[in-house]
Image (cartoon, rainbow, N blue to C red; front, side, top):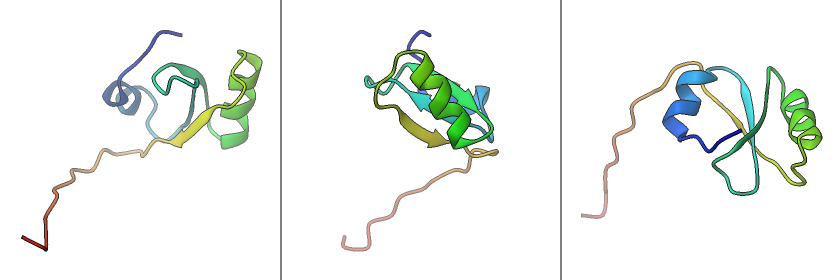
Length: 68
């Protein structure tokens, strides 16, 4: 698969587990479970996949510095 931005990943795979290749931008496998995504990544040739659970909804984040 080609490299993909995290925003695209969130839009395309809400509620799923995503395995990335070692470059951290190329999707190596997707599944409903961690195990399924990891197995797909391994089958695609990724030795050590980086796994991430994508939230069903994108929540806004606003940072705040308490030590200003």
